[in-house]
Length: 131
Image 1 (cartoon, rainbow, N blue to C red):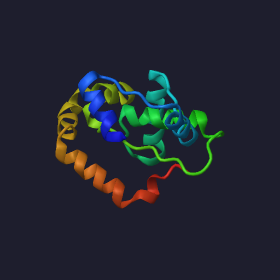
Image 2 (cartoon, rainbow, N blue to C red):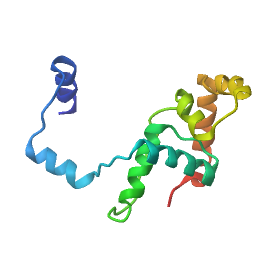
Image 3 (cartoon, helix red, strand yellow):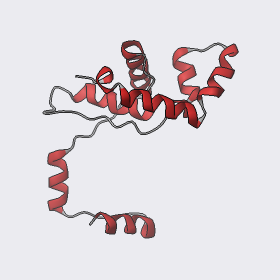
């Protein structure tokens, strides 16, 4: 089923799911959104709480989680989808890094630093749990 959907997406730019699949997905997943300002607040909040820098995409997931956590049941997984170091301008806006830190920002935008950060997080998962 998934293969067919992905083929349709690649070939015609869209795919369709039937009512049963839609109902099943809706019973298992929640969706949400947040504004640019809420996204920035989420990045700052996670940094202030855990000294862990998240990207804007992950911040939207976290912001949506905060908005909906009272109606959610069970565990929540927020999957990080990008590196915060690919969004230097956004991070700069939030933390207002001075110009002399440009070299630091360039260093953090490398693949190696992202790998190191992800490894640290994976090795210390309990420290970053939200609940």
